[in-house]
Length: 174
Image (cartoon, rainbow, N blue to C red; front, side, top):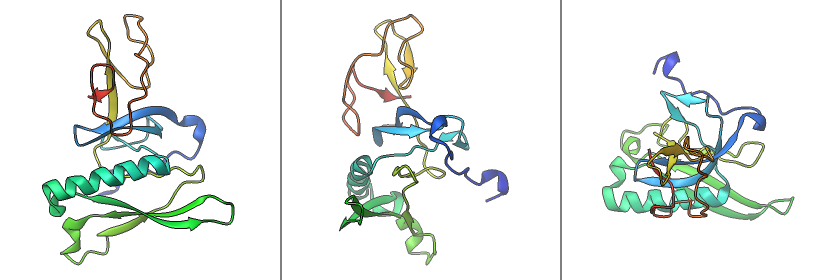
């Protein structure tokens, strides 16, 4: 990996983050996320997720590994550890790249630490996250964080996210 291929670190300030939805084609998502749209790795996004959303991503990656094989699917695990001193849930988020495990690589597993805001960057700098989109009745398509189509109509009101199957009123992959 050259210096230009190195993933950028997540944005340091929350003021640069937007609320949106992201997905990886039809494999993962759409999931609610916060991200800096200018922070990219080879053009792909660096989303940040709540622990509840990470749990949903973990369940889906484990299902995909069962379906397609561990050799081609990275998996996320959330290991619960009770409550911390501040009364917050304590958890370890583990990212396993099984394809590197048999190679004896030191990078086959890594712990994903939460940022200061409590959000986790899952797959940023390695996975092909992109914006989920929504379809307007006029035929236009917009990225999820865009609340109005170019024709002026608002995005349909819906709460289906975090891995729900898309339909005509929910976001679709771009």
